[in-house]
Length: 434
Ligand code: DLL
Image (cartoon, rainbow, N blue to C red; front, top):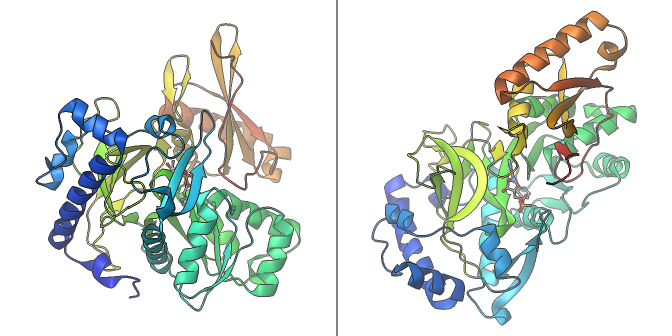
């Protein structure tokens, strides 16, 4: 079995908890001393920076939210002077100001190590030729995976995003063995490949490290089949570092969280109370080693579940389920809360429908109407009216079961829904804001 940092990845839970506590206490101290935002917040709520005596005490501290980062734009959350910052990234978001993320030299070293762990866990090594099709720039995906892959000694091709036909040419000529991208872009590559009259045997890929957006087992299967690879998931968010927070090993049964650097909790997003391990809720993360921008109980808005199990890979790091939804991508249709992830999950149970869908919400009179557009195969679309009808009926039924409202279902031709090089967009909301 290969590891990047064997000791950290395989130590006993008890030993790791001792490290976590020590690092948590020092993070709180530094945040209190060096970040006005935290000093004020602690003072206001009467919390002492030494009030954490054991790990569970973290639950007594207030949360940090994306709004807090926006309010302290651009550098207000930094715990070190700007001269110690050696890299800046940011996350754009769709509304409001971007959030700015700073790294010290030590933060960059740790970032490289954590991404390296994930790359190795996913089955790649120094022999590999790693094709990075994430955008390079303020987005953390490109640089994050790039430096991690270089760190393990792989040959890295910084292709970045765009021009898929050219990317395929490069993969053929340079014999790329590992593809790094979003899962939707991997599917787009597979489709473009077949449009070009090529197939997986014309490439040399063996592994795909995909992340940055939710994806399920059906998409994994499709990517693995069409590209002939092992497709593994990795998770992160820019506010906390970028990629490198968690990643799957080849068991493909949950993402190992790098919990020696990130303390993870699950809370009930309504009551904000911590939930016991194993329950589904919102992931909250406290950084344990970060110098430039320590974050305490950061609300990720991602919905997942944490669990400990003996993993065949030997890693003792806690696992998280593939995050499939956010507490804030919810849309409300006629008073009912709907998550795109529920639709994606329901789709997985239906044979004959592709995983490509778009939810279109509009007003019909005073009521909302939800239409779910789904791509189906050309054969089904043109020839087989009867099959088409029964598929539509089945889709309406499973969706209604999943989201508790009855959507209209529209079958569309293959490849008519927009493909995304970055994150896939699953909702078009045509309703006018009130
Ligand atoms: O997407 C960082 C990243 C880059 C992760 C490359 C993995 C690979 P942001 O742009 O800040 O950062 O978006 C973070 O994307 O809160 C999740 O909602 C979602 N997300 C990221 N990875 C996954 C994943 C990067 N594997 C937000 N599964 C997060 C599901 C994911 N959702």
